[in-house]
Length: 423
Image 1 (cartoon, rainbow, N blue to C red):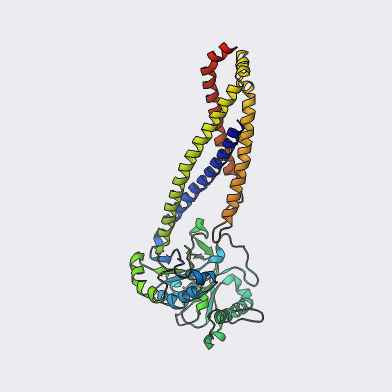
Image 2 (cartoon, one colour):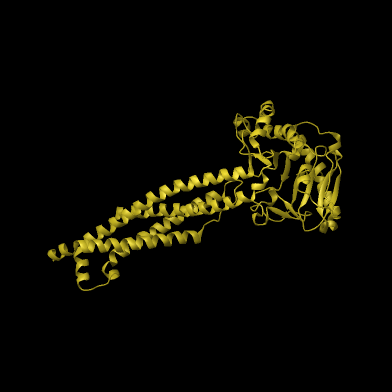
């Protein structure tokens, strides 16, 4: 009996844990389906997703940057010339700590000139911001409400470009990573601020940012990158293998054809083993939807098996206890004792088993939840989904109570005549 109770508690805990995560998967599925609909109109742009290790495992494990350098130095200019959009908005992802350091009033985003052509940003006069591709100064579009910070912002972005006392700028970062001197023009690069109109929603091109309001950012500072004013280090994160990678390749609705066109270039750059898949955001989300559905199907199968085991063990416990206490139970029923008082020993055992089951399930869910929240580049999950856990536990309790009542009633009727003869 003790072994059966322990087994029931264990499988019950496993069942609760799987049901909690299945419920979360259904929530994720609904969110992804809504997300896919929102991104259906961006199929002219695609990302290399995922980013494969390919033949470079040793180089990656050694902490090398040769792949990222090749992508940023050699591949990016080709895709930029072909109309690709660069939008780096990672600082606005929901799990990034809020509040930039002074003197920045808000986090900056970084775009290229192709972005401005497709998603115009208005200057303070109401005209679209335009920056020539041969612009050599570092251009920063700043909302007009921050005009009082002009001197501080200019100094900050100047230092971010050319460096300063105890401060590594893009120039120093480029020389450190590429181990070669930068052109002189970048050592003396100036910063130019363009004041933009207030209350502008800037499209983030990021599925995690402000999904309830079109994935936009209100009044960010925008750094504008051109072929002439940027270095390799400025676009080093262009192809990070994430769904929201900054570089969006222009595909005009046919990502497979564009990937085929790029194949010779990728082979020449030795990137064909890394950048193997070019998908639109919509396609990538649909792929994730399929993965979630597959996961739910597997979870459903395991949940069904676990539920069957739990119910069989529960019924076995009722049968074992009823058999051991049959004389006492029969006397109580003959004297008109109610169900709860008649089966109080059984109910105490099952209650203790359920409490143990709940505690074990709580530990399992807590461990798995905390583990998932530590995954890189994934939005942290709540430490413990208590409302969901309580709902699942409550539903299972109702099922178990009904099973106990039905099983006890069947056993009582079936054995009534036999127990009377024994008395």
